[in-house]
Image (tube, rainbow, N blue to C red):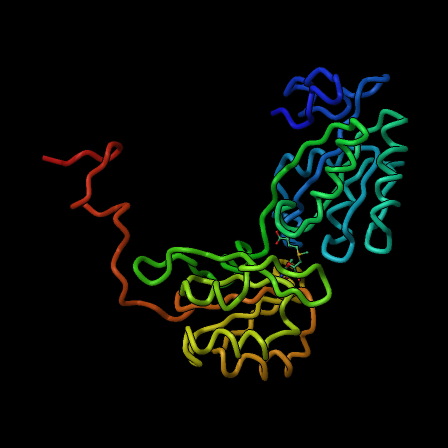
Length: 284
Ligand SMILES: C[S@@+](CC[C@H](N)C(=O)[O-])C[C@H]1O[C@@H](n2cnc3c(N)ncnc32)[C@H](O)[C@@H]1O
């Protein structure tokens, strides 16, 4: 897959073989920064590709607040492994530029899937400006891991067919105009709200008029970690339950009718005998 802008960098694209074998970059050839999704925390939720790249890259920069040490413990002996939680963007980029100078590949390990609140866009902007190649390796996002831990589907036929991945603004950058919780609540979709466990009062205030105060809510805390907690409640009581559990960070809020004990929904059309399709033609 092509990732850098050839017209700007003048680089030749590397073959998929080189992408799959980080050690193939040595000897003065271009290096690559691999943005790797490490999943929610459970090391068993790493993809094979993520595992192989972390185990091979001589430099590993990982978001230590959400990526457990076990995940990066597989870095090769002698690798430069740094927790980026206390670092600035300038500092992490300087590490990458130094690795580039040495011709060493970098495993840049993020929690969940890097495309969601991974702050990789600003890193990519700098890599492109410096003509440094990169690849993105997807990971299991927290919302999917939470659904799995709950043993539930988030899209139930004719109940909820859309999932809104959003966040509360809190201390981070403000939300774009139009992307308000109020607007998303009007859709009735299943909401997966990141970075919002300290804003449950606000979430209840905004959602209750649209979903009802008895709308099911789950607060999924540190999914995939040994201290994982899944707290079920409703819009009206979830705040008390979360306060009692003393949860103040690293939790995903799932809200919407699909989260409840819905049992009177129709089967999907996918396996419906009355709905033949090209791979399951009408039987005689
Ligand atoms: C900076 S975002 C990273 C999201 C991540 N890239 C993903 O794909 O899930 C951090 C927020 O994601 C959610 N999150 C990440 N990992 C989590 C986990 N293991 N359990 C519950 N929520 C998690 C929380 O809402 C947390 O505040």
